[in-house]
Length: 279
Image 1 (cartoon, rainbow, N blue to C red):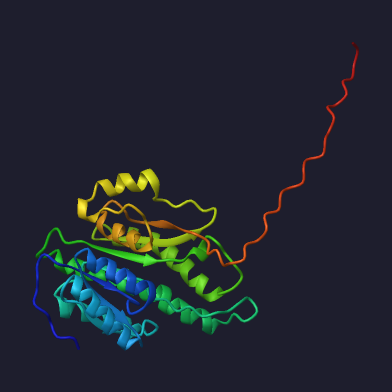
Image 2 (image 1 turned 180 degrees about the vertical axis):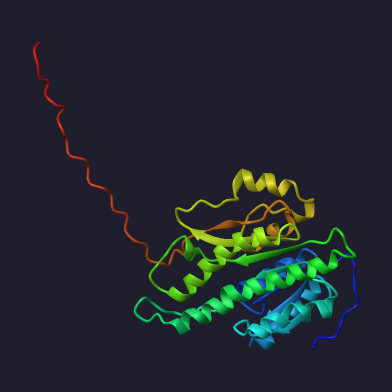
C-alpha cells in the first residue's frame, strides 16, 4: 500500500486510469504540467508506471502509482479509497484505461462483450460512484467541495466500422452512462465525455467557441489548440461543462487508404409537363 504523503492544501488531485502508457500517460503529464497531483493507475505496466510517476512528479510533486485490475469489481471498488488514503482527498478522475481486443460479428461472444463491458464501462461507473461518495463526505467539512469525472470515448462511435464489436459496444454504453451519471451525481460531481472524431463530424469546441471558452480561464490555463489532452484539461477546469461530450477533431492519417469519392450521376432531364385545356 502506498504511504501517505504530506498534504498540500492548494494541490488538486486527479486519478488517471491507464496512465502508464500511450494516451493515458500523455494526459497525466498534461495535467501535472498544469498543477494537478496525479495518481497513476496501471495494471501490468510496472516500469512504465514508475516512469510516468517520476515524470509527473518533476512537474507537480507527489505523484504515486496504483495497481488495479479494472475487470475485477472488488479491485475497482478498492482503487479510489486507496488513492484517498494516500493523498487525503481526490478532486477528479479521468477514466482512460480500456480493454481493446479485436472481434467481429462472426467472432462475437458473450465472454468478449462482458470482458469489455466490465473494464471499459462498469469500472468507470463504479469509480464515478466512489468519487461521489467521497465528495459527499467532504461536504460535511468542506461545503464547497466538488468533483469531476472525465470519460474517454472513441471516434468509432461516430465512424462505425464492423470490427472491434465488443469494444465499440462498451464505449457506446459508457457514452450513455455519461448522461445518466451527470444527472444522478449532480451537483456534487460533473461528468464529461471526451472523444476524438474524424472526417465529416463537427467538433463541439473549436475556433471561436473554443476561444471564447478559453478566454474565461486564467491566462496560464488557456489553450489555443484543442487536442484530446487539452480537452480533458478544459473539462476539468470549466465548471459549466457537464453531461456532454467534447468532440476533438483528428486528421485522418495520410498513410491510411481512403474510400474513393463517388460523384452521384447527373439527374436525367425531365421536360416540363405539357399544358392541357383550352387556350
